[in-house]
View 1: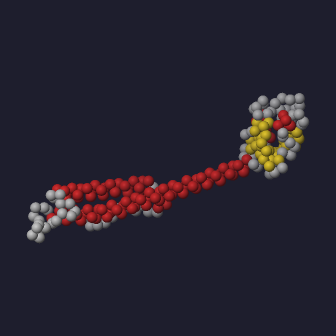
View 2 (view 1 turned 90 degrees about the vertical axis):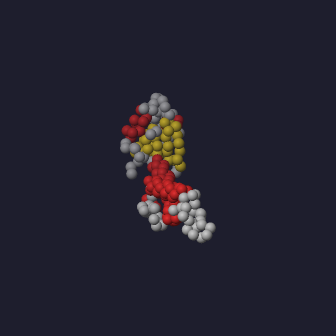
View 3 (view 1 turned 120 degrees about the vertical axis):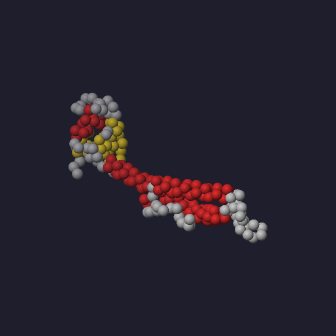
Length: 216
């Protein structure tokens, strides 16, 4: 047996390292440890000579009570395997580091993308899709604080992303009679949130205001 690395398969590009690669390295490590243990048992069987026991007698002659060839071979293989073990432990450490670094990078990237998506979503919600061009005094719309010129960015569940026509608003109003609706408008360059409750009153409809779509 000659000294060589037991790691015959490279993990390749660290950017594509997988947990399966790490598991293969750990399996190789376990195999090396088993081989080292087996060779130590060989030395144990040779009168527990170990790695440092003398191979000559007190007169300087080769010992005859042990198998010298077997001892030398076992010691040589143990040294080689320990070097391989040290190398593969380094490979495992680097692989885990690369795996964790890539996972951390992915988490950061995902967070940035999620924040960007949320920001874009919020920006989309701030885009006005309709405008108030009339409000009747004493109407539900007037009581809620809605004013002529208000540009609507959200009317209940309706926003610039799902608005198609005024029927969308009419449907929300019809299904919300007697219940407060959250309405967001842009007024004087600022976002204003209002609570509007569609309900019967002395005038026509459930709101008492006129809304027109904003053409883009």
